[in-house]
Length: 182
Image (cartoon, rainbow, N blue to C red; front, side, top):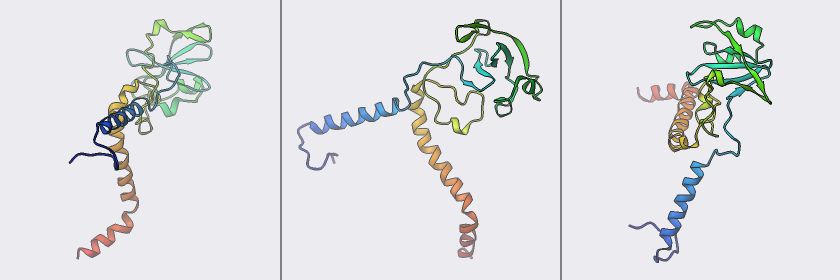
């Protein structure tokens, strides 16, 4: 059985229409999050400084005066938005938040060549960043990730919603289920 649009002729125009629809759907998925902004060197900022990731995976915070703090061992929720004095006192499971140097101002940004900063690789944030509380949850990546993120999100988010609704309504349906099986 061939699929065709209602009232269409079998002269090959169906194939062109289907191909066009598939191309438009693919473009929508691939460009769904594309923005006109350039990838940034920093991946986050607050009122006290900007946050950068190095090629070695360290998280650095550059204060407004150029002081460079190594924030790798700190929890993001405990460090973001707090002044340097409070951040330096944070408990860390693997070390201590420390001052690792000072950056030189270059225009409106900092010269961070000595720290081997890894810039963002694209303009799209992950579809799964709301589920993550890591330092780089808001870091933008290549939009090519949409090829696997869209199908994964189409499965994951409805599954999460069903589980949450099931747990929330369990006091209602669980007794009914138990009583009907007796």
